[in-house]
Image (cartoon, rainbow, N blue to C red; front, side, top):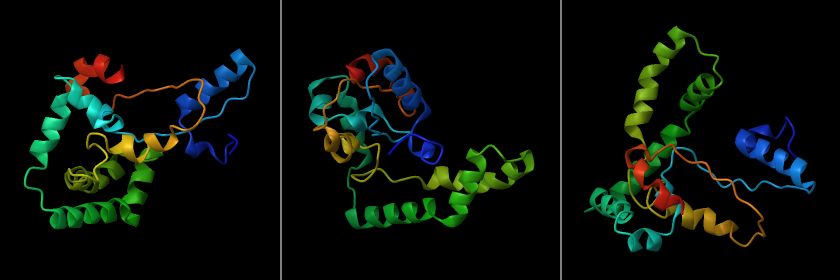
Length: 173
């Protein structure tokens, strides 16, 4: 897929500018493999074995164990499906598109707040299908692209680890 206005929505702006600069600096073709999911923790992109090996990073595993203690898979799968259905509903998608386009007036935003609050409350229940479960995105996304030849990587992450910012040096290394 070539980067052009028709395909722009599939690329992050940061990755496009990074690739463009590399292309100019190195004078070689540059491709972008997008493996991303906004609003996730860095721990979801790492193999759980790496988290378990470090006493500080192990906190992600311990918190997950606590959050899923006594998890009833039947109820969990039902809640997960309900949350997915809600997130994909036409009303929800239309509202979020409108907000994200920045074309929302103050009064439209006030009108949208109850729906946006519902989104925050409904959220994905914590469990094995949650994108923030330790190792989830590593196993389901990142490990799927490890066979590609790669000369460089850009990583920018900050969305969901603000309460563990001091662990970033370990997480990213």
